Image 1 (cartoon, helix red, strand yellow):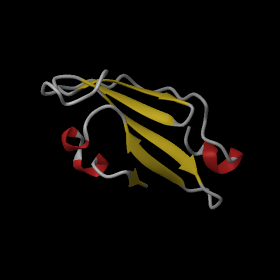
Image 2: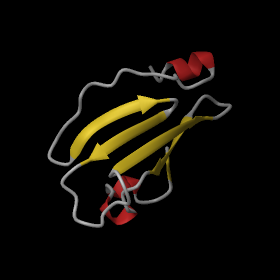
Image 3: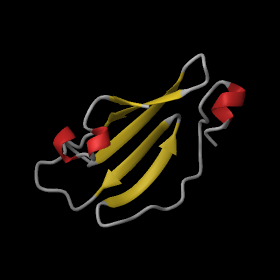
Image 4: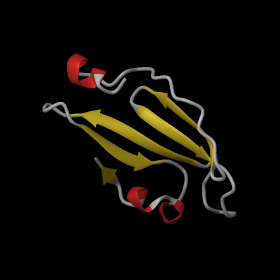
Length: 88
């Protein structure tokens, strides 16, 4: 789990994620420090390619994880907390 980052100094390479689906979420996956959310039911033109939001985690020397939003969904269609570049 992500608490392992504090003890090992690295984000886990793999992490089991429970199936997550809703009106707007097709699925959620985790690999190598990146959470990928695949969306559905978006307006035409809301994404370039597969409609995804990614959260990329980086651990700093103090053991804190900073998350940076990205993905193919245009910022104006992302949740407000993911419309700017970096979140922690």
